[in-house]
Amino acid sequence: MRPVIGITMGDPAGIGPEIALKALAREEIYKECIPVVIGDYEALKDANEFTNLHLTLREINDVNEAQGIYKTVDYINLNLLAPGRWEYKKVSATCGNAAFNYVKKAIELALENKIHAVVTGPISKEAINLAGYHYSGHTEIFADLTNTKEYAMMLANDNLKVVHVTTHVSLRKACDLITKERVYKVIRLANDAMKMLDVESPRIAVAGLNPHSSENGLFGDEEEKYIIPAIEEAKKEGIDVEGPVPPDTVFVKALSGQYDVVVAMYHDQGHIPVKLTGFKIDAKTGRFTEVKGINCTLGLPIIRTSVDHGTAFGKAGEGRANEESLVDAIKMAVKMARYKFQIK
Image (cartoon, rainbow, N blue to C red; front, side):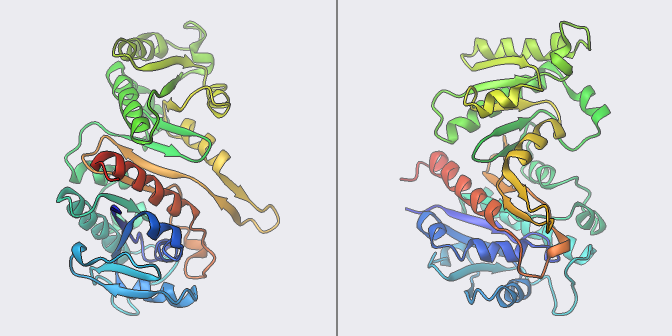
């Protein structure tokens, strides 16, 4: 049995429609799942033309109609885009509204167990806010629409997996959000996520917040007050967790294979090492030659994975977007869905 994976198209003005079709032009995807794109015909049709993929676009009204046949893209058409009423490379309320509603529809299907997981294409935070949906990103949309209070972002590539205690807040506010309760809950979420990815006994490292993990209070007291007590509580539950490990060495240790996942304290502490190990750029052209990375929201009642990059408006509509991150996100969603739903 193949799990059914819903793929949201992302902002139509960005590279989302293009990478969705490029990912589904790979036969390997259809061997692992039945993909269903949630988006708009107009954007998919246009992307199919300028990429010269020549895929068959097959509109369905119900997920049960999806056939999962290679070179045929099953899609649910929300019909939110009129021809000539949207434009590549530009932030607009029209595209923000469409992108939000693709996600909303996918969440509804997942909560109804009509699809096994949701994989999201990139959205523009500015565009969805222009459309009247005041969220700082996908993670917050999923948390709100699934009524989830405790959640965390995990970034992953072939080399490194990182779960964040805080994400889209200022660095000043992130420090205030580091509490024993929050750190402890994120350790547990990281442990559960690794088990869904077939790591039977996860080895978890918790990064310190301050340089050298505060050097016994010399550079701050957050480690002593909040991080160490959270680690000790997790250890009592039998979780294999260490820390606080100084942030300037914890990722080196994880890359060596010493840990399966790192719990990072704030956005850039976790994002920089994942992107440094997963992204490559040609210095002469300035173009990305490799984009390896996945964003996964932990703690939700449904499975959600995503690309680890933005809308890339600068290259939208040109046929040169890289689909690797989306392919990786689909594969991770499949693995997690097989674990959660016991699909053989």
